[in-house]
Amino acid sequence: MEGRPLEEAELVDRAKRGDAEAYEVLVRRHQQVAARTAYLVTGNAPEAEDAVQEAFVKAYYALGRFRGDASFRPWLLAIVANEARNRRKSAARRARLALRVAESRPSGDAAPSPEAAVLGSEERGMLVQALNQMREPDRMVIGYRYLLGLSERETAAALGIPPGTVKSRLARSLARLRDALSRAGVTRGVLEGDPTDG
Image (cartoon, rainbow, N blue to C red; front, side, top):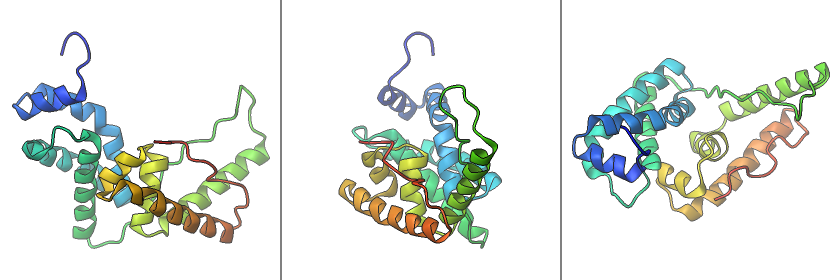
């Protein structure tokens, strides 16, 4: 697609009319967030990859049901999460979440001390373990807001809940996570602040 980048609404409209190239652009734009969403649900990279591929196919055939006034990303992520859940259930195993936590980066050019690097790695491991043990609704609301960076409105749309419910559910889920981290001996503020206001 030559020229200026197309707006998402225009891409969706073209894809609805059968423009495969427009849908390919949408797929490329949302591939990573879809993969992370599927991984949040399945905890298994190959299963997540398969779920994403199937979800993109299902989303293409469901484009006619997509409301033009809605945001495409939450609509797509709901399809991805549903497909991932179906795959997990059909495999008859309970998924344990294994999140890829980005390496902590020191401020400036200073390298972290070996002690700080080990402590950071241990705390990330405890965070992953605590998230793995949470119920899926807790993992998903935390994952969408903090790990995928969705806004409250996008999180609500992806989870199929009212926007006002996101704050209260997130607060309860974070409290449970903090409690689990506290029991695991993590005393520093691992989850301080909300990096994605909106």
